[in-house]
Image 1 (cartoon, helix red, strand yellow):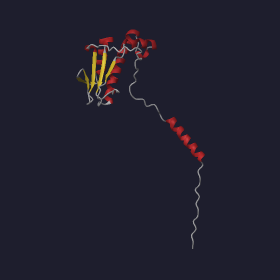
Image 2 (cartoon, rainbow, N blue to C red):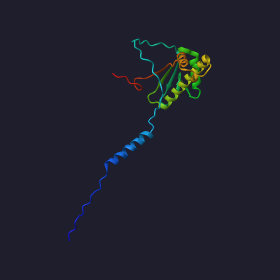
Image 3 (cartoon, rainbow, N blue to C red):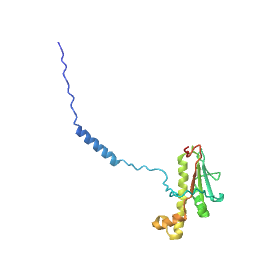
Image 4 (tube, rainbow, N blue to C red):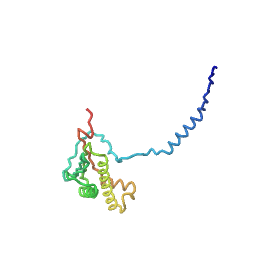
Length: 177
């Protein structure tokens, strides 16, 4: 006896419903997913110098606060190990004492962690915030946050951020040949 094979037909799927479902899922994930994942430091670069004046200003040693981050993530202030607990107050006092002549230099070892660099930058930014708040209170009798845009511009001009980052040739920022 011969056995006949029965042909099976595979049911077809309606492609339009599949496309509709895919589109709805795509829309759902686009609406519910947060794309805002900015992390890091917000810095505004100074305007580009249109002239070719490349004179390097000379900074007196007493007006320079030199930070170095070692490969073991230690923060050195003028070659002395410091902790970040009191650093904010020390930086703000330095800025107040030196005025427009102050400069803060950061020399980070390329193998140091970003977390240590970020903590140091946060302390420096907070110190500038404290100084700007003091200047605003002295001149306008209110905090920096409560000042209008013209007053904030005045305070920013009185207390400019003077931060220099040092890069070595082996690590840090590489120069193109």
